[in-house]
Image (cartoon, rainbow, N blue to C red; front, side):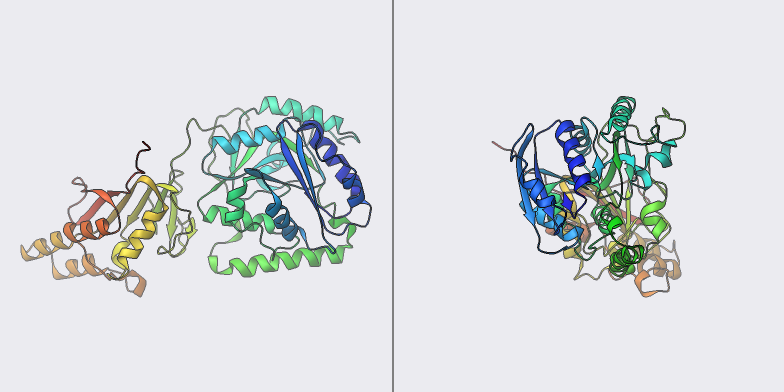
Length: 448
């Protein structure tokens, strides 16, 4: 929890935290030079009380901004998970265990956040369900707590996939947040959660809203101490940094954050599509070189469509020689008409990179023009020289569309074996002019 003045909000938030947290936790407070007695008050709190197993207070001599302060707290965190909390939140009974349940249920989850008021986008109750049933949460939060408790029963176990999550209340695995580099300190006061959400999605993780956790966010309590011009300048500085950082991504704002996401429908709420729990964790399938012919068709929720260039069906624009996904991440990697665009000297490293992101036992599928079949068809007079040229060298006029290497079953099998793949087999049902090989990343050895 990062604090900068607003002691009244902090006291109310920590009271709810102590009363309504149903799992052991350590509280880390990072204060950005508050001048209203916040630090002195936090120092009066017992180090351990109830389910709170520890209290760490870090103080800064000046306001370093939200993102740098969060990173200070992250460095001090000792648990397997970490939850970012704004100090202007009201938390409902059982909030932490329910967030944890979704994080544990969904192995591809990069982060989980709650539903609530004042969170925005897919997390905003008002956007999804209409006006709040209470006008004021009450000084003691009684009206809020009564509604949140009833809502938790109504929406028990449900979740929604989102494109971006608010940093006001965000649960992640500590190791993952550290591996991602924490929050971007360039987003000093704003845009930090949008940046983190985007980095997680580009790394192949998904973001989920636990629908059965409802929080009340008063919103911008610290910003309220600034005059409007100063607030606008601070926010603009953060978003300018965000836009400079991601200007080369080639994806518009709506695609990043606003468009409809792939939800799973259960029909319980008429005005809300799809937040029903999955019956089993989804398999992670990467489609490399999606272009205009993505695996499973455009918008297929079973695939993450990746390409080196932006296209109508492409979700992740990246260098296919250096994928933005962690090790041992995907169940399937499919590269259809991609390998032939790399020079022979590049291919071994490219195949090793694709193998890196596969889980042990995962399958790599490579589809490329079949040199041997095309040559046989030409010498038999079955195809023209023009057709051979188009098939083997590429029909596009742009340099990226030209083919730089040619493969048959034997040569492709050899480079796959050299890259560490096993159980390599050709799919006989595929059209003969296309060579489709499936190769498996060796599983981990059995533990004796």
